[in-house]
Length: 314
Image (cartoon, rainbow, N blue to C red):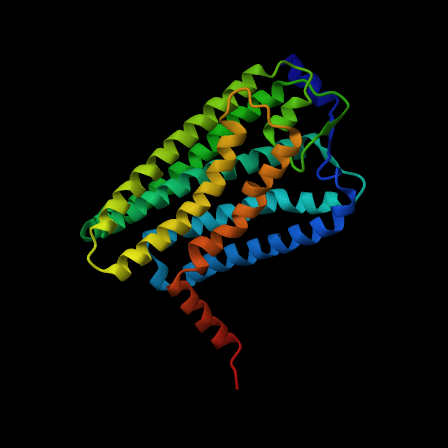
């Protein structure tokens, strides 16, 4: 308690180095990340809007998809604006509580996305393997509970990590070798013993990854077996194409998380961590609307109708 009061009495400040190792690339990187953020915002918010206003998409699959889009938009909005700012200004300072809040919200988004991807895989398993029972099995109540459970766990895990991070000693002006307040980078500048926070992060990350990947893997095994039994060749191609798209996004997201947080005593350099973090903080939220939504024929047809209605051609 005394340590906490002492930390609050003299609030430290952090400096995010970002991509200062490449000064000649600051303008190109700014333009690149700006375009990616715009695509992310338009894609995810557009998907949420299309799903909400069109009754055709009031199904469990699109219900989960709307929440995935919401998480992706929020995640990108927590990280990317500060990244863009630090590419064009010299003062890259971020206040102590702002940094802790950015860490917490970004971590909430990561955990929520992990479990939403698992929920979506389970939803596809029920739809493909038990189509006659789909409406009963995936009831509105169950869907709401699955999403609520994902959000609850996503808020609980980072809260525990945050409590430990707040107990660490930070004095003066600390330089964080990252483009956002990523957990390992923040606690690395602490003067305290960080073995317990690192162990907690490893345990939470490993549990989350193993549990969600087990659900995803099991669901897709049953999906593949069911698809192989289909008599229609076109049906098999369509199902495999959809699964390949989903697995691509899952591989990018989970592959990065596994390499960064689920390897004990990892010797990844700070530069490697920064580059890898770009994939799950900036690239993945941009790709998800394209992979999960915009390649969907029904979504594209609705989008064309909206465009034709708003911008009639004479």
